[in-house]
Image (cartoon, rainbow, N blue to C red; front, side):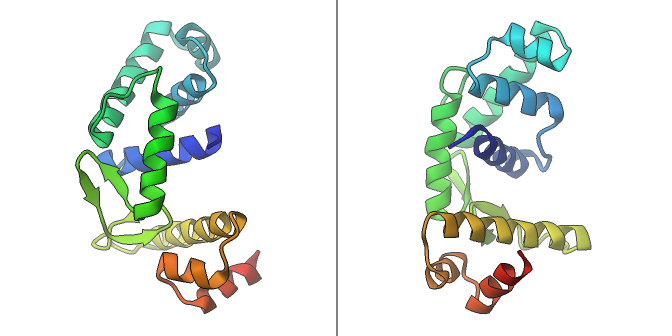
Amino acid sequence: MNVKEALAFADEVVFAKTGKHLDDMQVGVIEGVLKRQKYGDIARSLNCTEGYAKDVGYELWELFSDAFGEEVNKLNLRSALIRKSRISNVTGSVISGNHVARGHVIGSLNVCTSQEESPEFLRGKQRAKIEAIDRLQAVGLSDEQIAQCLDITLEEIRQVDLTE
């Protein structure tokens, strides 16, 4: 799992728990921690105080600890994200503590089926589907296997291939 993938999964977890995506400061702290930077260096790159960067990190570690049902901190963030993303990719659900949130599953992204389907929501849903198909093709799954995993038709996969 590279930093970009870890940030994307972290954003999914935060969104599943709070209904909000990571903000720039949270992204910066997570990225810095994943790159093994000290809080002082992270704070300098984000133009904030070291204390503020630590506070943002502490809030994130609490949120991830609650979501994953295990203690998460600066030292084990990478391994926790890797471990939980593998579980999420297998189950197709974002894990929240001891609860698994299920809805309409697209890759490892859980999209609540009760959400109003605005144009922005539908664009995001399509973008997530394309990204999931691309990731699964990259690991060598056939179109038939992808269709089965994502519970979509072969025609939908072929349409994605045509638009790229």
